[in-house]
Image (cartoon, rainbow, N blue to C red; front, side, top):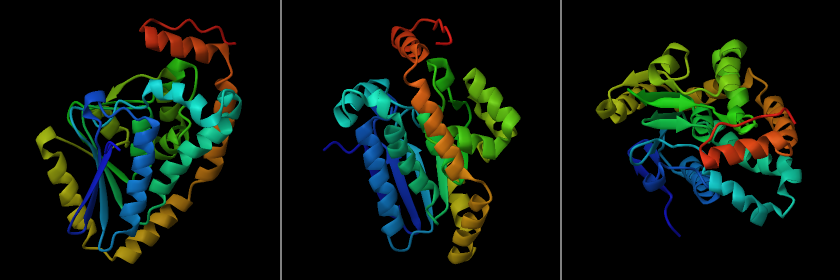
Length: 263
């Protein structure tokens, strides 16, 4: 099996690396499954105090590999669009496992962090971006919504008004805007990304690990994420059956503007 996700431990740091650089780390089912296994491995590895997640090559990740949607019929049957709740639940489960690690998680973003990749980053505790990184949740331009926690977690992070602006428009925004809006903690030069993450990890390591884990659980428990994920799944199960989604997907693959009809 191709190693689409690499892992390694250096002292108290556990590193997870998206390793599909020829595709800008676009996320297919195989990569997502390997990522899930890496999160489980991080949780079971002794001595780990911080988890760093980064992407190999020119981008953190360009988001979901659209061709992966074609493989959903093989996994969920020919009528997979009528089973979108099950599909969404399976994808959400991976990022919920990541979010509920009691270990602090830091996403190191560079190049592009789009769609499902940004949803992954939002499931981390902190995000550090290299200068020039472009981010987006462009799902509405395909006639769907961010349904792997993106709608819920972005709203929790920046509030309803700014979340609505970014999700309604689907526009790309740069790292400086992300920092100003509280989506990323720091923006640093590209060659300083790893150093800043290790500096932050070292500072966290000065605190008691049990206290950090409990603080994370308390802070995350203040928001009703489970209800948000349920609503995302419900909405997406409706949208995947619309003519607008078919138009959005076709226009994306043909690189032309979509003509939505609200049907």
